[in-house]
Length: 435
Ligand code: XLS
Ligand code: NI
Ligand code: NI
Image 1 (cartoon, helix red, strand yellow):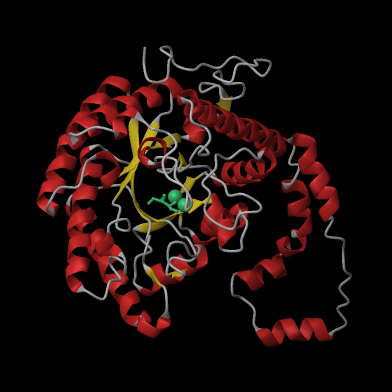
Image 2 (cartoon, protein in one colour):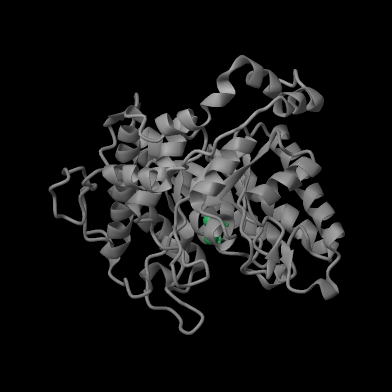
């Protein structure tokens, strides 16, 4: 019997099922707007929260007591962890997974030793991926946990720390390429500051710009075809992080000429921490042409920190998928569960149940969004609201074929625009008809 006490993969059993280990809405082969549900949602389980996080919080330590986290041989522990991880991927039948370098292999006494350990474990991954068909959505380097990174990685005042981070990121993108990862993610965990009293902001931004440019050059050199993704977050662990939100990252990419190669990985709760909604960030990323991938974990309404809970809110997810379906959905991205079960959820099956419940919430929302699009429930009123812009003279304005004086003359000739209702409550009611 496996760690999870389950041998057969979890299957679709239909909406009437009461089994927490069966899918009620996630029916991977079901066609939704001409594509299989699995190909729309592109679910990914993450390594770090599920298999390396011990269940601690700032006031207390480990609660999970995972067997693979207690041993004397770090490489053997990493192998045991890989066995359980791939068992979970198979039981959930998720197509993808994600990892940081340090989640999967022990850090050695030197960078060279750490990289060797990473190679050993990723060889095992390659074999397991071949056997199970699980694919890699993205890889990343953890440039924030070790004390050497306490003042940042690429933005560290010490160039030797910058160099160490370059060494780690090179090994991590090499590993991602070796495993045919579809994206490479950079979350700038400590690329920010605690106090401006000791911080040269302009210098740190220039360092980060160089770091990203070199990573892009290297990606091309090794023929890594997926995009590099920056994951915006406004704070935590730093008081202020340079990748604050989608708009800030866009400005950074534009300034350092990285827009052709770098997109964003948007995390639901990072959006909230930045004072936005998730769909705001997603819509803006599409509008600016930088949409890449999603971390689907949510926050808590009362806790102002990154609680990384499994997404369960169908109505919020419906708005997400409505936008995504309109935009054609993911290309290289996917829905990554950068999510932790709560520290009281200590039963092995809690890990499975959490993924299943959240995948079902997403699948249900995808179906609701499909129905809304078929009915033009939101698109109809939206098109009507902007319909005035369809006339030839107004189209000409947008094409740049008019000027300030011409338009002003039209207004002066007696224009008298009449306000119209924004119909917000009507639209909120419409959404609720589908969820
Ligand atoms: C932390 C981030 C992190 C990234 C990967 O808040 O969400 O988990 O997704 O480094
Ligand atoms: Ni996060
Ligand atoms: Ni994340």
